[in-house]
Image 1: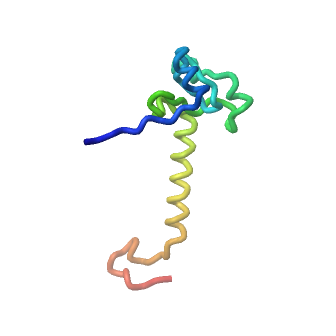
Image 2: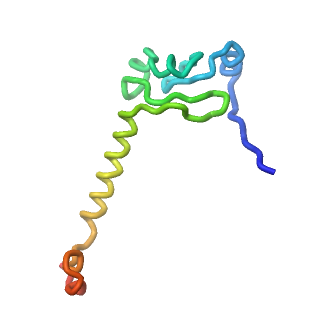
Length: 105
């Protein structure tokens, strides 16, 4: 038997959901629709990025939208980390010519 855990909601969130506000933007404001939450004007002032980065469905606790700019930034950071990891790895001639794999610098 599989059970799924429902997110724990505060009294404020429960009252908002009863009133129809079930989408939460990255600054914490609740909205009736996903599109309204994406266009949140409060995120300009309260979010560290200066715009809405994520929208969650409060009832299920799932992320329903993520800013394309934030996704791109994470991908770039992952690529940079991989580049740094490879740059710090020891170089061998075997990387370019397998016959010379035993020689290291």
